Length: 255
Image (cartoon, rainbow, N blue to C red):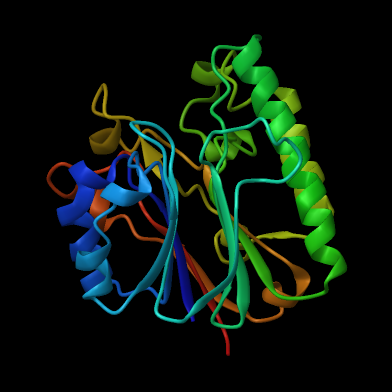
Protein backbone atom coordinates (compact mmCIF):
# COMPACT_ATOMS: atom_id res chain seq x y z
CA UNK A 1 0.00 0.00 0.00
CA UNK A 2 1.38 3.39 -0.97
CA UNK A 3 0.68 6.34 1.33
CA UNK A 4 1.60 9.84 0.18
CA UNK A 5 1.45 13.27 1.76
CA UNK A 6 1.22 16.53 -0.17
CA UNK A 7 0.71 20.15 0.80
CA UNK A 8 -1.15 21.28 -2.31
CA UNK A 9 -1.32 24.99 -1.37
CA UNK A 10 -4.93 25.50 -2.43
CA UNK A 11 -7.28 22.88 -3.89
CA UNK A 12 -8.86 25.33 -6.33
CA UNK A 13 -5.57 26.46 -7.84
CA UNK A 14 -4.04 23.00 -7.80
CA UNK A 15 -6.95 20.82 -8.94
CA UNK A 16 -5.52 20.01 -12.41
CA UNK A 17 -2.20 19.02 -10.83
CA UNK A 18 -3.93 16.94 -8.15
CA UNK A 19 -6.12 15.02 -10.60
CA UNK A 20 -3.14 14.42 -12.86
CA UNK A 21 -1.07 13.13 -9.95
CA UNK A 22 -3.83 10.90 -8.58
CA UNK A 23 -4.21 9.38 -12.04
CA UNK A 24 -0.52 8.91 -12.83
CA UNK A 25 1.01 8.22 -9.40
CA UNK A 26 -2.14 6.56 -8.04
CA UNK A 27 -1.38 6.40 -4.31
CA UNK A 28 -3.66 4.17 -2.27
CA UNK A 29 -3.92 6.86 0.38
CA UNK A 30 -3.26 10.57 -0.18
CA UNK A 31 -2.98 12.92 2.79
CA UNK A 32 -3.42 16.55 1.75
CA UNK A 33 -2.70 19.79 3.56
CA UNK A 34 -3.46 23.47 3.02
CA UNK A 35 -6.50 22.77 0.85
CA UNK A 36 -7.85 26.27 1.68
CA UNK A 37 -11.50 25.32 1.17
CA UNK A 38 -14.56 24.81 3.32
CA UNK A 39 -15.91 21.27 3.20
CA UNK A 40 -18.98 22.09 1.11
CA UNK A 41 -16.82 23.60 -1.66
CA UNK A 42 -14.32 20.75 -1.81
CA UNK A 43 -14.40 19.14 -5.31
CA UNK A 44 -15.34 15.71 -4.02
CA UNK A 45 -17.07 14.35 -7.14
CA UNK A 46 -14.03 14.74 -9.38
CA UNK A 47 -11.83 12.94 -6.88
CA UNK A 48 -14.40 10.23 -6.17
CA UNK A 49 -14.63 9.57 -9.91
CA UNK A 50 -11.00 8.38 -9.74
CA UNK A 51 -11.93 5.73 -7.18
CA UNK A 52 -11.19 7.56 -3.95
CA UNK A 53 -13.19 7.89 -0.78
CA UNK A 54 -12.50 11.10 1.07
CA UNK A 55 -12.95 13.03 4.27
CA UNK A 56 -12.15 16.72 4.68
CA UNK A 57 -11.67 19.19 7.49
CA UNK A 58 -11.84 22.55 5.80
CA UNK A 59 -11.52 26.23 6.56
CA UNK A 60 -12.14 29.22 4.30
CA UNK A 61 -8.98 30.60 2.66
CA UNK A 62 -6.59 29.03 5.18
CA UNK A 63 -5.33 25.67 6.40
CA UNK A 64 -7.58 22.69 5.66
CA UNK A 65 -6.68 19.00 5.44
CA UNK A 66 -8.06 15.94 3.67
CA UNK A 67 -7.69 12.17 3.51
CA UNK A 68 -8.25 10.41 0.18
CA UNK A 69 -8.25 6.62 0.12
CA UNK A 70 -9.06 3.75 -2.20
CA UNK A 71 -10.24 1.91 0.92
CA UNK A 72 -13.15 2.70 3.23
CA UNK A 73 -12.34 5.49 5.70
CA UNK A 74 -13.45 4.72 9.25
CA UNK A 75 -13.13 6.01 12.82
CA UNK A 76 -12.62 9.61 11.70
CA UNK A 77 -11.45 12.27 14.14
CA UNK A 78 -11.28 15.90 13.01
CA UNK A 79 -9.09 18.25 15.00
CA UNK A 80 -6.15 17.53 17.27
CA UNK A 81 -7.27 16.80 20.84
CA UNK A 82 -6.20 18.92 23.77
CA UNK A 83 -7.61 22.38 23.03
CA UNK A 84 -11.32 22.73 22.36
CA UNK A 85 -10.87 26.42 21.59
CA UNK A 86 -8.60 25.71 18.60
CA UNK A 87 -10.74 26.23 15.49
CA UNK A 88 -7.94 25.91 12.92
CA UNK A 89 -8.40 22.99 10.51
CA UNK A 90 -5.04 21.25 10.73
CA UNK A 91 -5.62 17.59 11.63
CA UNK A 92 -7.67 14.59 10.56
CA UNK A 93 -7.09 11.07 11.81
CA UNK A 94 -8.79 7.94 10.46
CA UNK A 95 -8.43 4.20 9.91
CA UNK A 96 -8.14 3.03 6.31
CA UNK A 97 -6.63 0.05 4.51
CA UNK A 98 -5.55 -1.58 7.75
CA UNK A 99 -3.53 1.44 8.90
CA UNK A 100 -4.41 4.44 11.05
CA UNK A 101 -3.31 7.65 9.34
CA UNK A 102 -3.28 11.30 10.27
CA UNK A 103 -2.85 14.24 7.93
CA UNK A 104 -1.08 17.09 9.68
CA UNK A 105 -0.63 20.75 8.81
CA UNK A 106 1.54 21.92 11.66
CA UNK A 107 1.59 25.69 12.32
CA UNK A 108 4.40 27.63 10.66
CA UNK A 109 5.15 29.67 13.78
CA UNK A 110 6.59 32.79 12.20
CA UNK A 111 7.36 35.40 13.30
CA UNK A 112 9.16 34.15 16.36
CA UNK A 113 9.19 34.86 19.16
CA UNK A 114 5.53 35.69 19.35
CA UNK A 115 2.00 34.33 19.64
CA UNK A 116 2.24 32.30 16.44
CA UNK A 117 5.39 30.57 17.64
CA UNK A 118 3.81 29.85 21.02
CA UNK A 119 0.81 28.35 19.22
CA UNK A 120 3.14 26.15 17.16
CA UNK A 121 4.90 24.81 20.25
CA UNK A 122 1.62 24.19 22.04
CA UNK A 123 0.28 22.38 18.99
CA UNK A 124 3.37 20.17 18.90
CA UNK A 125 2.94 19.35 22.59
CA UNK A 126 -0.62 18.22 21.85
CA UNK A 127 0.61 16.12 18.93
CA UNK A 128 3.15 14.44 21.22
CA UNK A 129 0.35 13.64 23.68
CA UNK A 130 -1.79 12.17 20.89
CA UNK A 131 1.12 10.04 19.63
CA UNK A 132 1.59 8.64 23.13
CA UNK A 133 -2.06 7.60 23.16
CA UNK A 134 -1.80 5.98 19.73
CA UNK A 135 1.32 4.05 20.72
CA UNK A 136 -0.58 2.49 23.61
CA UNK A 137 -2.86 0.82 21.08
CA UNK A 138 0.10 -1.01 19.51
CA UNK A 139 -1.20 -0.70 15.96
CA UNK A 140 0.25 0.47 12.66
CA UNK A 141 -0.14 4.21 12.23
CA UNK A 142 1.42 6.98 10.17
CA UNK A 143 1.48 10.66 11.17
CA UNK A 144 2.12 12.47 7.90
CA UNK A 145 2.06 15.97 6.57
CA UNK A 146 3.65 19.38 6.48
CA UNK A 147 5.40 19.62 9.83
CA UNK A 148 6.94 23.04 9.18
CA UNK A 149 10.08 21.84 10.96
CA UNK A 150 13.49 21.39 9.34
CA UNK A 151 14.86 18.48 11.43
CA UNK A 152 18.58 19.08 10.89
CA UNK A 153 20.85 21.32 8.84
CA UNK A 154 21.19 18.64 6.14
CA UNK A 155 17.47 19.16 5.47
CA UNK A 156 18.03 22.78 4.37
CA UNK A 157 19.92 24.12 1.37
CA UNK A 158 21.38 27.01 3.41
CA UNK A 159 21.00 26.75 7.20
CA UNK A 160 22.35 30.27 7.67
CA UNK A 161 19.31 31.66 5.85
CA UNK A 162 16.97 30.10 8.43
CA UNK A 163 18.74 30.88 11.70
CA UNK A 164 15.90 33.11 12.91
CA UNK A 165 13.09 31.10 11.34
CA UNK A 166 10.51 29.16 13.36
CA UNK A 167 11.25 26.10 11.22
CA UNK A 168 14.72 25.69 12.74
CA UNK A 169 14.37 27.00 16.28
CA UNK A 170 15.75 24.71 19.00
CA UNK A 171 12.30 24.45 20.59
CA UNK A 172 10.73 23.28 17.30
CA UNK A 173 13.44 20.75 16.59
CA UNK A 174 13.44 19.47 20.17
CA UNK A 175 9.72 18.76 20.04
CA UNK A 176 10.08 16.92 16.73
CA UNK A 177 12.85 14.82 18.27
CA UNK A 178 10.66 14.15 21.31
CA UNK A 179 7.91 12.95 18.99
CA UNK A 180 10.24 10.65 17.06
CA UNK A 181 11.93 9.42 20.24
CA UNK A 182 8.63 8.06 21.48
CA UNK A 183 9.38 5.23 19.08
CA UNK A 184 8.40 6.63 15.69
CA UNK A 185 10.48 6.40 12.52
CA UNK A 186 11.18 9.22 10.07
CA UNK A 187 10.40 7.00 7.08
CA UNK A 188 12.31 8.90 4.40
CA UNK A 189 15.55 8.59 6.36
CA UNK A 190 15.28 4.80 6.40
CA UNK A 191 15.93 4.71 2.65
CA UNK A 192 17.52 8.11 1.95
CA UNK A 193 20.52 9.31 3.94
CA UNK A 194 21.37 11.93 1.34
CA UNK A 195 20.11 15.49 1.05
CA UNK A 196 16.52 15.29 -0.15
CA UNK A 197 13.92 18.05 -0.23
CA UNK A 198 10.11 18.34 -0.32
CA UNK A 199 9.66 22.12 -0.58
CA UNK A 200 11.07 24.87 -2.80
CA UNK A 201 10.02 28.50 -2.39
CA UNK A 202 8.38 30.23 -5.35
CA UNK A 203 10.89 33.08 -5.06
CA UNK A 204 14.49 33.54 -6.22
CA UNK A 205 14.54 30.55 -8.56
CA UNK A 206 14.61 28.10 -5.66
CA UNK A 207 13.31 25.18 -7.74
CA UNK A 208 15.72 25.76 -10.60
CA UNK A 209 18.66 26.03 -8.16
CA UNK A 210 17.42 23.12 -6.00
CA UNK A 211 17.37 25.42 -2.98
CA UNK A 212 14.97 23.30 -1.00
CA UNK A 213 13.85 22.22 2.45
CA UNK A 214 12.67 18.91 3.90
CA UNK A 215 9.66 19.81 6.01
CA UNK A 216 7.11 17.18 4.90
CA UNK A 217 7.47 14.01 6.96
CA UNK A 218 5.87 10.61 7.41
CA UNK A 219 6.42 9.31 10.94
CA UNK A 220 5.63 5.61 11.38
CA UNK A 221 4.77 3.62 14.49
CA UNK A 222 6.88 0.50 15.17
CA UNK A 223 4.14 -1.69 13.70
CA UNK A 224 4.06 0.40 10.51
CA UNK A 225 7.86 0.54 10.35
CA UNK A 226 7.99 -3.26 10.42
CA UNK A 227 6.01 -3.18 7.18
CA UNK A 228 7.89 -0.26 5.58
CA UNK A 229 9.27 -1.38 2.21
CA UNK A 230 10.10 1.88 0.46
CA UNK A 231 9.91 5.67 0.54
CA UNK A 232 10.69 8.63 -1.65
CA UNK A 233 9.93 12.10 -2.92
CA UNK A 234 7.98 12.54 -6.16
CA UNK A 235 9.59 15.67 -7.59
CA UNK A 236 7.58 15.62 -10.83
CA UNK A 237 4.61 17.76 -9.69
CA UNK A 238 6.89 20.60 -8.54
CA UNK A 239 8.21 20.98 -12.08
CA UNK A 240 4.76 21.30 -13.66
CA UNK A 241 2.93 24.48 -14.65
CA UNK A 242 1.34 26.31 -11.70
CA UNK A 243 2.70 23.90 -9.08
CA UNK A 244 2.44 23.83 -5.32
CA UNK A 245 5.64 24.89 -3.60
CA UNK A 246 5.64 21.44 -1.95
CA UNK A 247 5.88 18.10 -3.73
CA UNK A 248 4.52 14.69 -2.64
CA UNK A 249 6.43 12.44 -0.25
CA UNK A 250 5.48 8.77 -0.10
CA UNK A 251 6.01 5.44 1.63
CA UNK A 252 5.19 1.85 0.74
CA UNK A 253 3.71 -0.37 3.46
CA UNK A 254 3.61 -4.14 2.89
CA UNK A 255 0.25 -5.86 3.32
